[in-house]
Image (cartoon, rainbow, N blue to C red; front, side):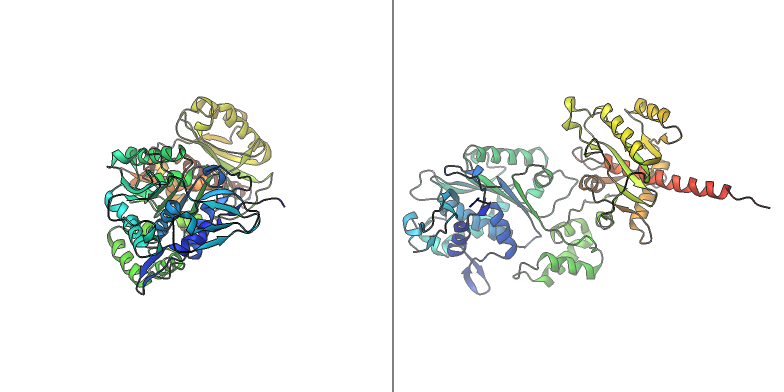
Length: 530
């Protein structure tokens, strides 16, 4: 029988047999909720091609990210995984023939627990010398997990395996330098260790050079031992370029990303809909008092609504200055095919280096989409993917040429900086259809931005879009920069955030409005009046 990816079931069973938590009923066994189990099973998913002796490469995911609202239960889950990695069967040890037994008695634990493996199931064993770090930006933050961990050990069967938890470091007996230690950015002497497992807590606030350097240092230590990491956080501020954001936006296939965000159609500002958001977020956490969360969220929303929506709504919301109510924009997504020959307009925003270059299309009916060219290449170009860090102008020309051939392009608005020659050549080839549209003009730009946003927000508008994730990211990143006369233009909250596709989308929408208006004028001129 051909193998398939399958979780390390012995690890999941071990956690529930050995970990405890405190509740209103006293000390009770730790039990995975459905969401916790799905995440943990994903982290311990063994690849079908794994071979005995493999460490991190035996698993489908090298590291995992869990994004949930405040008080959801991330810290108890982290503590349970630390216990497993410290003294439980967390390491892949080959494939079972059937009947093999993992016995606690053989692994330093006198509790008597045993697990019998089924044929074809992945076997598990303990780390030889586990070195585990609980990492956060401050010592107070590490206590969220470390304090729970101590209780989890001291109040359950693991007290006989890990008897000394009163020190700053929990030593693992009979395993050399094996230990569990909390580490903050200030504890530089502990950073850089060759760790086998790491918990990275609240990476949504790991920002700036220090935050990213901390994450890089931990991951470097893991790579030397075949270790893996779990990263947890609330929703982050997209303007801050945090470690959590980079993890989530990374294209790495061996990173598990578990981000369960509430339905986009619900408004945080509406009290009744806020309740629906919070009830949805905590449906899998029965220990949470929803009324208490609602009260905390309401109080925080008075002064910091964006922060409240991130903490308790588990939504990516920028601080003050965000241009587009992103939930409203996302709600406009629809799967609408655009066949060849359709009358469309184009918006183009180009950069020389660093920023993106983009062509966004829109039908005259108001459906916006990211077109493709040359066998499926999308017309959003990241300069980092091209030689010398520059998008080749020949690629952009080829894309324009193919779009004009495949569709009936009635108008294209193009921002000229760095691309003036190409735009002029396009205008010469496609006269009266390609136009310069300078985005640095505050009066015209303000008007175009207001038109786009109004058509997104107005219930009677026909505007829709294809739901492209890169375009969504650029729309989300855009912030308002004030200009004279109560006007604004778009900017980005940080250098790492890109908004070029959003600018192209606004130009496409402006081109569509002008094309529709011009068409109406032509229809009126066809009449003869007596």
